[in-house]
Length: 115
Image 1 (cartoon, one colour):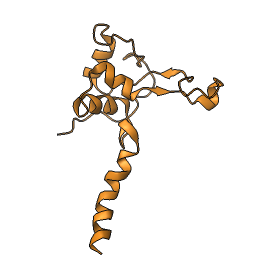
Image 2: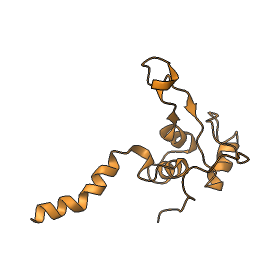
Image 3: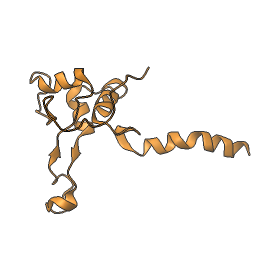
Image 4: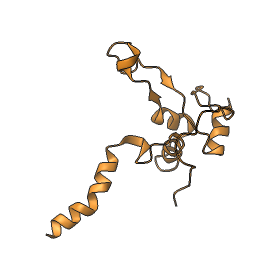
């Protein structure tokens, strides 16, 4: 019985490891911030870690996993990350991002730092 209680308590933690760097929320800003804060990546590394590609099954690019088009990350819910993406001295690899002037609905919730 004790093992079952421990397993039940740990199950959410074990399953969250399988969802990748995005965690449970799945927002781009949350992923980049988490990669920078907890995994120790710089901005370029965090953007690389959180990069998303279009579904290669619909892009007709073959079986190459990197064949899909790189999708812009939506960082508008975190003004500091948005400013970093817009700054060519910080975003040296020119990672694509959704411009702050975009009228598309914001992806994810407003970023709230974890303590």
